[in-house]
Length: 390
Image (cartoon, rainbow, N blue to C red; front, top):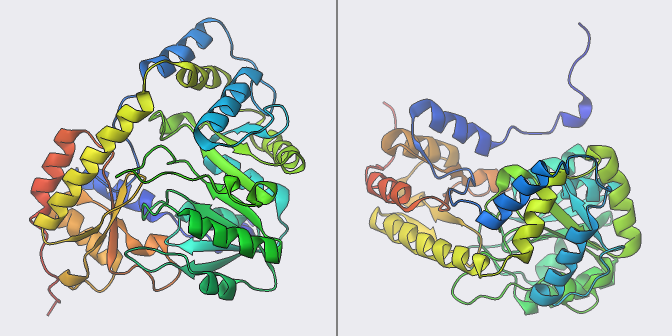
């Protein structure tokens, strides 16, 4: 057969997250690598979806999502994000936030356009950019603060840069962008006419009183920002694949056109499930946040006790950890050694940086049941210093 993989996937790299998950399964380890939350979904969300299935709400919805859900999202945006939008023209419900990101790139950028990622970045963002025929460009933010400096941001732009991706709270660093940093983005994006694409999937998972600020609420960013948010992390339903886009009407219309072609509509009964979650009484989100903060603190303490150096996150449910003192030549070697010595899986730091970056880091996910975390922490003490082969 003469058919071979297309040229458009030639630069794609298999996900280290998937690789480490398979290796963890092979050795029967504890997976603190992939962002698989163990907390159960709220009852209201589950019952809402079950009721929709029983009521035969299983046909296509409109491509932009059921009106009731878009209206609930608009109320949530006004109350929680201080962002006023029209549910009929500014919101598109999508097949997950990854689907939203892919639809946004296809709808609003052209092959050869440059798009700036702030490293450490989310690997799926990079591969989606490459699959879309765009030029990935990078600005490394230095640990431990991952601060954004205006001069560095301006220097990272090229003549073909058309967009910048802001992940806040960020995966994998847990970085939350401050108002001052978002005002830098507002100035630079305005000066260079950049599209701003945000990934705010972890907006409710924040710690130590750090406030989540939606970039679109700052300065003039609303007019040039596509805000991508979702329900996977908020309601612990990562397998449901439900997200949404908030954008100015012409941009939302273009994104909806592409989303319709990619997956027609988000799953109908699951839309009713998250609608029920948004309308439920009680502080479900606040309860999740408190549980995640306790898990963060527990894992960071355990990492320190094992001689590792966690970079304590402000948000999300990952912790980048410095393993440089153990002497491994690169992060993948370190992550594999950690798995084989302790039975605990992590993700190599190089998965989140352009070539040569992150080699002293690994990433752990702490969205796990307490008993699982405690067992993993006990095992981490077995990690040993690198010994070269004879």
